[in-house]
Image (cartoon, rainbow, N blue to C red):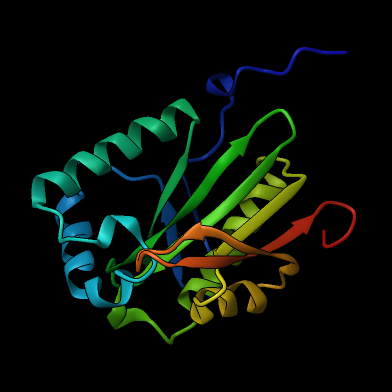
Length: 193
């Protein structure tokens, strides 16, 4: 049995591109663009995202950006920012969470700013991040989890070709205080890739 490599020793790119998008690790100083997108999208994010209960301050958004950058470098959490490759406009956030480097299992999370929704950007980003996880990070399993009530998030998972593994009934408390089911979608090496 070999010892697993310490994740901080893993070298991989901090950015990659899809047809229309630049997807990359956060950089210090990007808190303002994050804050603007959250403010624009607060009503749509509030039912699903804990960070959207109240509007963060500019300093809170910058602090989150810097902490996300450090977590990316430590390989604890691979938060990623999504930009329109042609215009440079900030579109939303995604990334790989709940990382298990020993088994190479990852979970993709995502949100998009309201003015960019409905253009297929998030499906394209999820496909790009999935490809990055498979080919660069040697993923064995990639999951997407969402509230059973979040039909838009579930639709992204389905459009990206993830298989519904199951529904965990009443397993999490939603932002509304009620118990929600969780849908668990996955792609698994040997089955879907």
